[in-house]
Image (cartoon, rainbow, N blue to C red):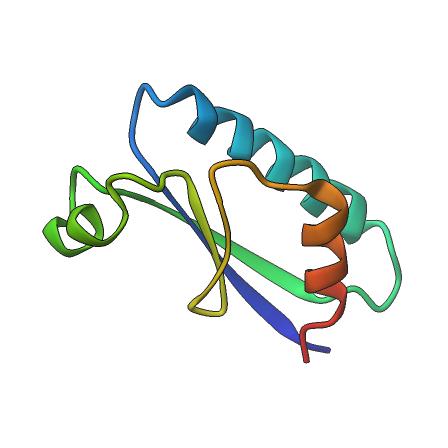
Length: 89
C-alpha cells in the first residue's frame, strides 16, 4: 500500500486556509472508507513559524503539497485531490 504525505501550508486566521483544511479532511474521510486507498499523513505548517515558507508562499496560502510537490494554491478542489491521492504510488 502506498503512502501520501500531505502538507497544508497556511496561517492562523486565514479563512481560505480553514476552507482548505475542511476540504482535505472531507476527502481523507471518504478515502479511508475505500479499500486500496493510500495511507495519508497530513501535516499542517504555518508561514508564521517558518521564515523560508513565509518567503516562498506568503502570497499563495493556502498551499497543499503532496509528497513535497505543490498540488494546489488558494482553493482545493476535492475531486482533483481525490484523484491525485488515488494515483500516489
